[in-house]
Length: 260
Image 1 (cartoon, rainbow, N blue to C red):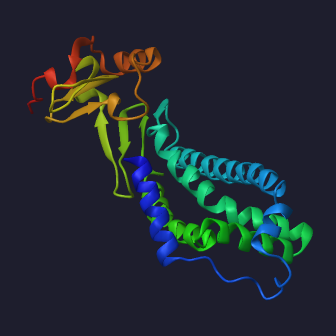
Image 2: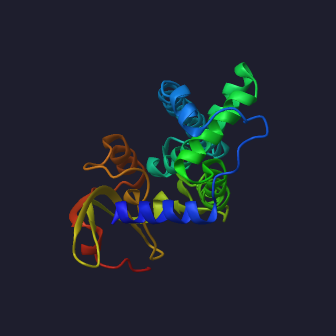
């Protein structure tokens, strides 16, 4: 299906976003002549685009992780922190690097060679492709990249900190926080993973705490999918709650917590 949708997208681009006409200063070269002129240039330009996209992506990734850690520090002091799943920071940098690398590379080129040569290369490349790649990528950045950026930004405050007296949970978005006092925990269970509606088992180890008010907290709801629980986390919770862990294959196998 992927090749089909790619071809469909390219066809729609050629139909609705055709390549722009030649720049006013382009009066002496045919497309074949430009193809010969840029026969080597297109290769180093592609390599440079990958480098520029990588730099853009890494910059955004490190900025997101830095801001996420800044939210952790707002809840200091804490003994242990459980960050959100690391995969949520990957997509925005990847997509932004992919959509911005073309125009950013043209801009960098223009800093060293003036505006005419990059503009001529852009005209030649878009004409060969049959659509205005610059405008298409801008559209992707605005109509797809911007919503992704907003959804990713809402995950920045998401984390769990284990403090001296309680567990503080900040969920997705800026919607307050929940606390769980260790002295109200009644059972502790180590689970190996989760079982979905189709009974498919997914390995995601966690520590489940049931509290006397009927609430349930699981370390498996946060962070990456891991096959085993963190020994440091387990030891910390054993010390704070005074409970000895039970064992279960999946969280769904546990009875519903009851309020006392």
